[in-house]
Length: 224
Image (cartoon, rainbow, N blue to C red; front, side, top):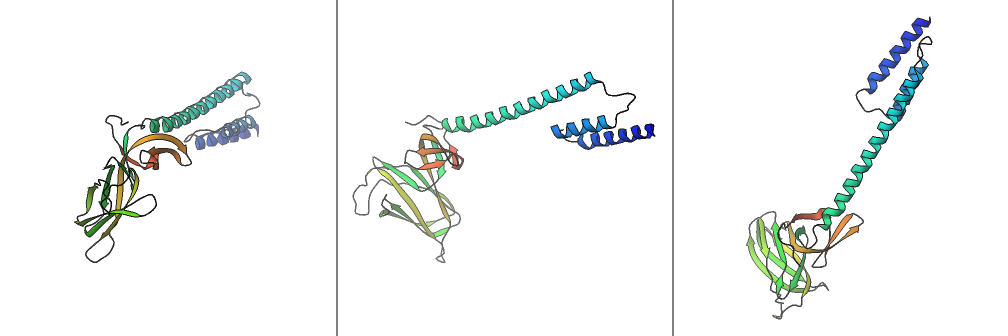
């Protein structure tokens, strides 16, 4: 009876070990294996106490090393998320948006993108109060991208004051249906801060954008 019991215990231990060999062993798994081995050990040949202590100590140290490794990886990722956005300070980035900055009669770079050809494309420029201050009639435009240039001339012929303006696109096809459009802006990053959704960057136009919204960044000289 005793021999049969020991043999059965060995089978249980082996099966349990095989089931866990394909993945990492947690603390609970280890303790279950140890308890099972102690329960079904041969009374005539019990487990060596020193060996048991050595195995337990080694497992504990390994578990601590894994935990430290996870913490270091988390710290590295956190530092990367903070350092990389800061490196964009003073550089020109491209983001999706409709804010155009006017300075000394020169507007910041704005690009209009059409998903399909349009029979009529009209660009409306609004001031901070929401009033249309300028309008450009581009006429027909193929699908694709085209740069917007504005020298600050208002509808009344006067020059607009320096500041930030909003660009809106009205595009329709030959059937009078709206054509989908987007605008992207190129502007300089002047500050970086922590926002609710991660790193936020403030552009020279005063617009705040999320770090993940950046389409591209200039690798040239930093701009003042």
